Structures are given as structure tokens and as C-alpha cells.
Length: 172
Image (cartoon, rainbow, N blue to C red):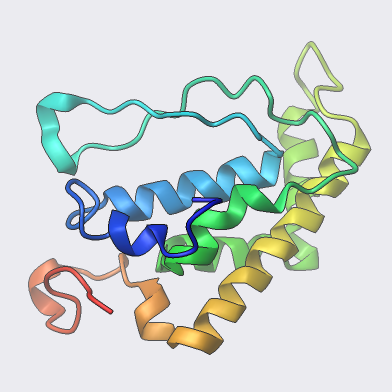
């Protein structure tokens, strides 16, 4: 990803990323890793039995929440190159950027009753808000460059049969 600016074009032509949910799963994983500052994602696992219709299993998040004062932008390179995201992910990120649903506040609230509290110190929570804005900026640039309908894949439809605009894989 980091050495070839056109790597995503190759990935999008390669099974299992050329159809189904896998490419969008990788984009979600990329955003997740960036939000927590995980600079050590080398691989992911799947259930082979389900083929491309399985989901990604995120193992080994050990480097997450390491450096709160540094945002490793290379983590977002897959998102920057592919410029693809699920509508549900995009909407959730936008919601978590709003003051009334601020990611850091929701995270702090979710962990306040944990016996190990504090799990994350305030600088890590603040970093998540900052990184969320950076990820949304990347998506905004993608939408400006490629157009909303190319970048944002509508996964909120009632039935796949009702959407004729998004059938098959997209090609550039």
C-alpha cells in the first residue's frame, strides 16, 4: 500500500476483494486501526468455510492506543487509495464527530464501570476524536474527487434486489 500509489486498483481486481464485502471490510478495519492508532496490522483472519461472504476477524490489536500524540497517516493509505466506504460506516463516523455523540465521551462512558478503569487516559480519547476528523477529511477528499455514489456503498438498502445502481463490482 505504502510503496505503490495504485496498489488498490490491483487489489480491487483480485479475489476475494473484487466482489462481495471483503474490500469494504478492509476499509472498516483500516478506519478502526487508525482511530486507535494500531500501527501493527499485518493480517486478519476469516472463516474459510463461508468464502467471501464471511467477515474479517480483527486479532492482535496490541499496538493500539500506543502513541496518543502521533497520528500515523500511513494507516489510512488503503482508504486514501481505494476511496470506498460503507454508507453505514460513513454515517456512523459523521455521527461520532458531532458534539452530542462525541466518540471520546461515548468511549469514556462505556468504560467507566470497568474494574480496571481508567482503561484509556484522556489523551488517548482526545486522539480518537482527532483521528476521526482526519478519517472524515480523507473521505471528504475522496467524495470530492470521485463522487459520493462511487465512494459510499449503500449497505442500508431493504433488499439487494431493490438496488439496480449497485449491482456487480465497480470498476474505474
